[in-house]
Image (cartoon, rainbow, N blue to C red; front, side):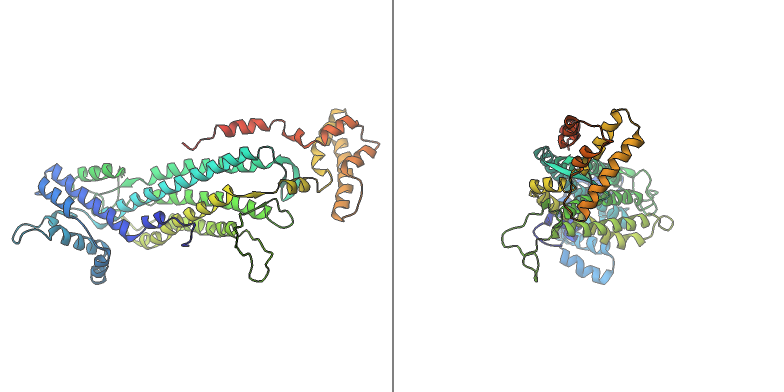
Length: 448
């Protein structure tokens, strides 16, 4: 997935380099907390030494792990070597205080939650940017007439700005859900082997969490319960579904038979190795495909909630793949849509042609209501309208030249609507007299 629309920042968050850097900070903070607490032998000077000299090299950690087959022990061994490297021979080694009273999951789970907040912050930036683009384009296309479709069939006139506006509102909901999910996963735990603080004071946990901007888990069982992570994965899946919805609409509207919009097509771009005329919605197809990955990975997170007793590691291997893949994929999807929606090519004349393609059938609802207002029953009015509509539809379907829907109504002796009333009925803007209400609401939309 490495291409010009992938941000290296998201991939870095899930790199071993970043994970080890977070691990190092947690271990240093824990030493500083122990020194401040003063219940074990570590002094403030030793904590300061650890802060100044703590370091690691990923390649060296990898070499040690190849022997120990334990990533945390390999990391601690490597970091300890840097802490003690300049300590005079015979002097106590400050590294002895690193990881004091802690278990591996105290380090791993707290770091993972911190990484997830880092990654979610990037998605919040993405979501805000795309949402604001959709809002801007909604107002730009507020008066761009097009046909609305239900079940894929022409329904009534609308404006293209409403499509952009609908996307903006959905992205706002995703934005709010992402903020909630960030809070739901912003937890840390340094509570020992089964969460009883048997060898470490709760003060250390509180100190570390506060410095990382996390909340101490009120009751961890060595692991931070994976319902936190499942909630986040569900929000990622929902957000992916939103992006898929936008991409699907663009794909449908770019069909040759519709051709109301197109993805930006750069100079020199090629659409097909065999057919030089092709301009395919390849970016939006990619978004739809990646959405399947993010949605499927949510199931992994749900399955990770049920662990054996206080802890097992069946979740660990799965989430190391699923979490990184979901965040990187979703970030990539956002970058694709930011580019496409911002530069989406619109064809207003084709929209008008499509609006008129069914020879006035999209005005049937207004004709129905106008006939009811003349005093006849709804059933009678419906019969008049549908009869003329179906005759018009048959001509359209068979590509036969014939009267328009309005002309058929005018010729129908049971239809008593005047020419003036028909003029009003067959004006597309009569469907949009209250659309300012919708855009007034959209004006208030904010991603702050």
